[in-house]
Length: 137
Image (cartoon, rainbow, N blue to C red; front, top):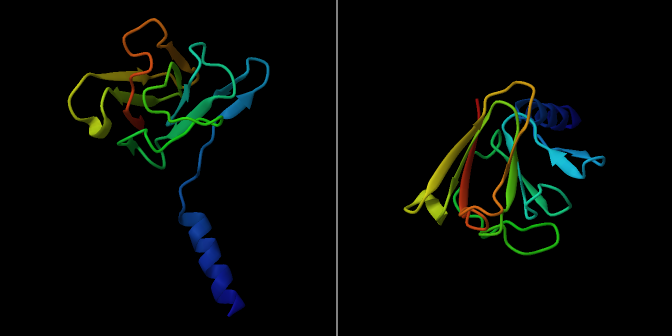
């Protein structure tokens, strides 16, 4: 019986894709995304503890941001002010939920070794994103 449990546990462990998580950098007070990952911030400078990581390696489409929250509370929907794209990652963001109607943007980070940051403060997109897609390249 114990052998069967160990075999099942090892199979699940080996067949489950790796979960990426952004890496916190206390010097610049932000979380750096990995390959296939985008980190969004409530603050327009892409800093601080109010951030959320979208992992395109495990879940590429987020049809609505209504059910996702900032660490301090409050919905991500219509409250994103900045984002950082991990290397070799494509990020789509949409004005409305379910990717339907409204405006959309495709932004890519084609580099192997650099992050790409975009401040939405002062632009039309500030606090207007309602659904996103994240893909590794």
